[in-house]
Amino acid sequence: MTPSATSRIGPVGARLAGAIGLLAVLSLVLQAFALFQGAPADAPVPVPLLRFFALFSMLAGVSVAIVGIAAALRPDGAGFASHPALRGAAALYSAVIMVAYGLVLQVPWVASGAQLWADLGLNFLLPILYLSWWLWCVPHGGLRILHLVAWIVPPVAMLLFFAPAEFRVPALVIAIGMLLVLIDRTLAEAPGPAR
Image (cartoon, rainbow, N blue to C red; front, side, top):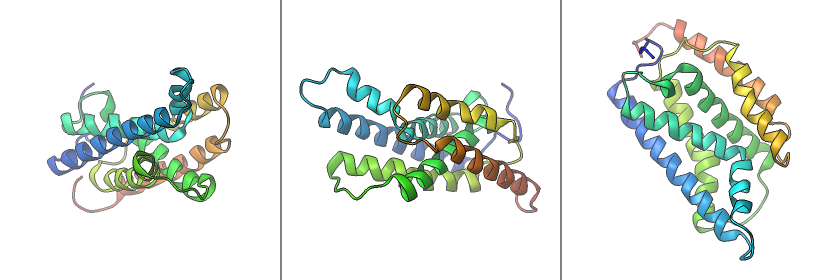
């Protein structure tokens, strides 16, 4: 893939992306550890593993990790993970999980240790950091409404294969996705320093 003006980021953006990507990896590892630690002793390995992949937070975290690490390694915009649609998908999934978890899915519970960090990291800290990076460090103008079609596939697939704990996620994906495309187009047309 040839780098384009909508995929290159600067050195500061690359360093921030790398830090965010590593934070995503750490949060994902802690979440996996917490799920395996909390599983019954006689539970087969696939049970906590399936629980891990059934959480929309993991989709958001994995996408942020991939995009963040790729941006740090290839700030010139080369490679699949630098495509505006993938960066937009990570922004969308991050926004969805922050809104869905913060407003709808969060229940009063007392977490501690790895579970507390994983919960706060994946559902609040990473979305805020990634969305901030996406808004201020990523060149804009590459997103299209048609990207929503690709963006909705993972949440719908999750609903088909896993328990629908987050049953309204596809509608939230469409709504927030449309908002992100609008923001991207607006930022691309805004006067100011080149991103």
